[in-house]
Length: 148
Image (cartoon, rainbow, N blue to C red):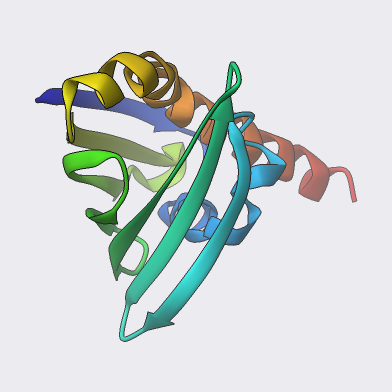
């Protein structure tokens, strides 16, 4: 099983970062490997979303259930996709006037060795860069808001 753990301090509020990460439908606008994303269902702080990934001519998709605790936590669990297991979480911790600390943790294992060989390198790139993509988008939105 592969485990990714990242922590970063950003100059944005927990609300801003939570709303950005939970806005699944707009992922394709700023996640370079995401060609499409959609919310399949939502209610009672549970969102089921699908991501369609294309990177270096490799295509895959997966669906997760995301349990939201507004502005502080998003828990992720696999519904379907090329994985045997996939679960993780985004934690957003307020640092008062400094912004917030983001803890991102993801654990996954591919369903078989063939999928791991084909999709593993792509997913490795995605998991290493996902946090930076969200931070870059948050910074862009902040710059646009302050210039209006």
